[in-house]
Length: 131
Image (cartoon, helix red, strand yellow):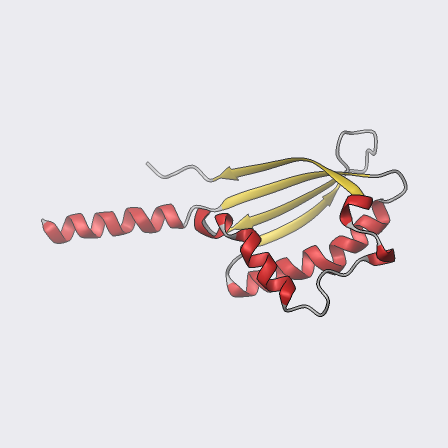
């Protein structure tokens, strides 16, 4: 009986750790800056997530562009993390990644992300736990 309880607790812990976290970041680029913002994403955001996918710290990532610029957002950044523990450490993980890059993030046209767009909202969703 004791081994069964230990096994059940171990499986419950693994299931909790396997729960993906979906991070959605809604961005509104500043007028005339969308192309520059997307260059920043291509030079920094995408390679970081690609590298961290290889290490298992990111499951997947995607950039979506809303063709209707009159909407409240025009760029959506999606990152899927393997579990809540990695998600909680994401800033530390990305800081470590960028510290290995020569000079940190690449700034196309010398502009920082805040000069290209505004993060309107960030949502974090998880998969439902199995019953």
